[in-house]
Image (cartoon, rainbow over all chains, first blue to last red; front, top):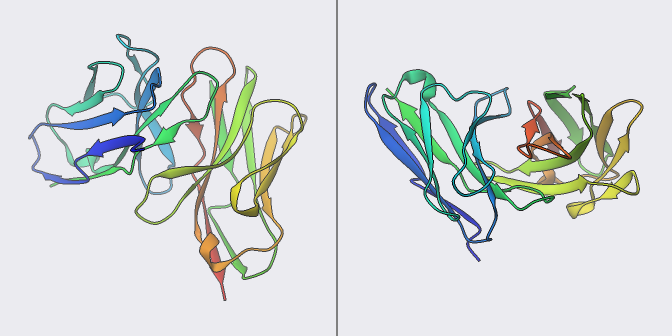
Length: 111
Length: 114
């Protein structure tokens, strides 16, 4: 039972480069989320998708775009990476009225 | 909108001692409450949750938490900690109706010393 799978686990980008973080869940959850984790700030919501075909901005959406490709997959794209986007990114999913399940994270460094 | 305040950024404690990690929240709507644990270089794992019913909830690894609506608190406790409990602990809330995305506190690092 894989749960929530994120790829890649590590990535180094140069300023201005683009990349897509992939996330897939096998628990048939409707809702999916992208968070970033920075020291001393907990996890902050970037975007979320309440159901297939819908996305909504979270607390820190600037510089990111998302795609809910189908019920299983929710990708996060950085169009032009900046050093301020150096962070650990977590994908999560949940069913209605249950807790969220998290992936193992992607550690991104922008130089 | 909601906010979560974890009052201690670090809590050092000796092995087999009791511990309490404090969490206060603010919300204009009714919320669900959660505690998650993060071990080094790993994702977040649910410790326990309060959805409804008894205000004292028990979770994994011997942890428990008490929901206090009047004080808007959800403090986490363990009567006797182990070295293996060393980790970062996050308190989180989500709306009962509407958007279910979690709002997290800034985390408390529990350091268990021998």
